[in-house]
Amino acid sequence: GERTIKIATMRVEFFDEADEHSTVHKLFPVNNYSFSDSAALEPGHSKEFGFPIDEIVPENWGGTIKCRLIDLKFK
Image (cartoon, rainbow, N blue to C red; front, side, top):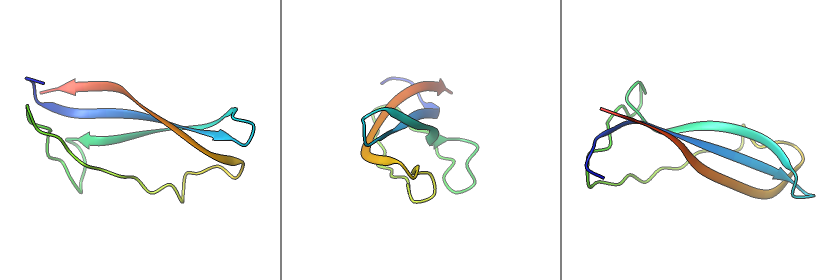
């Protein structure tokens, strides 16, 4: 895009073995308030990121995850 993104919010949904919605978490791959990586996403750039699921995966997880970008805050 043409604008600098200072916060990007993702919704991560875990589904159980019956493919029913189980748990939802919000993640912030771009966050100007982050202590570890507060860099904004400049126009025309991209950013690779990952997130550990070991601590957030529900016990009844069936192996399906759906992620969606739900909000952008611009500089």
